[in-house]
Image 1 (cartoon, rainbow, N blue to C red):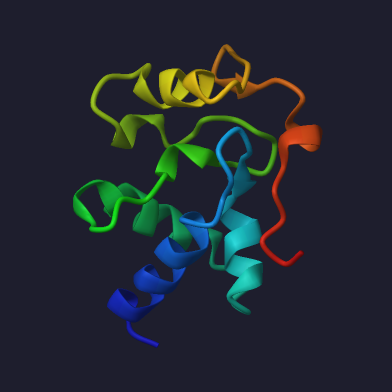
Image 2: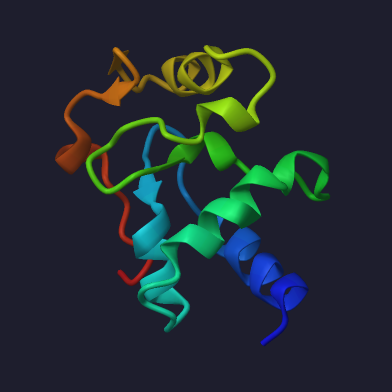
Length: 107
């Protein structure tokens, strides 16, 4: 699978994440049957700002709920602001109540 095709599959899953919920790079990779490719999912999210239809990349965090992708957004706080606008509490770049808000793309 080439990177472009992989990225499109990542974007399709990310578009399914409900507002107010988050998932992880690893969960998306596992849903694609490519467990261990979480870093590639991160690369896809980094390049998603100009993709149409839009990709809610702000809803994808690391395995502990940390906003590790925030540098890909314009302004260091935009990722957290977008999540807060959806009702997700974020403190010090960490999703509060991460386990409860986690959305599993395999379910």
